[in-house]
Image 1 (tube, rainbow, N blue to C red):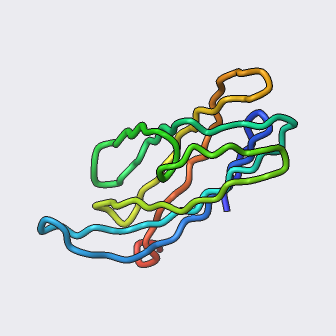
Image 2: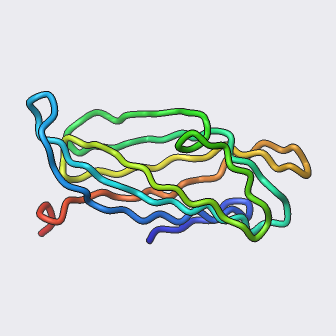
Length: 128
């Protein structure tokens, strides 16, 4: 598990290899990741959007921006957490992701970024 804390918001990430399949005559590698966002601050916060950088060992860097996470903009009260699972398709058995969440502090109305630590993907057969 990879973890990082920014302004009292703890991000924890677990990854998994889900398998391989062919798509558009190319081999693809499917990876899953589960992220827990834990509010260790004294204020309620809301996740409004996300920014991802996806690194595929055989492709160009892919940058993705979007609203919320998996269709939700969770409000996380002090001491509570929000967990979700998503996935990523790569053309290589090795890759990584990193990024940030854009959040709002409900007490101060301050907008701030919470860093998502770099987490790596690797198919078990791709390791020495």
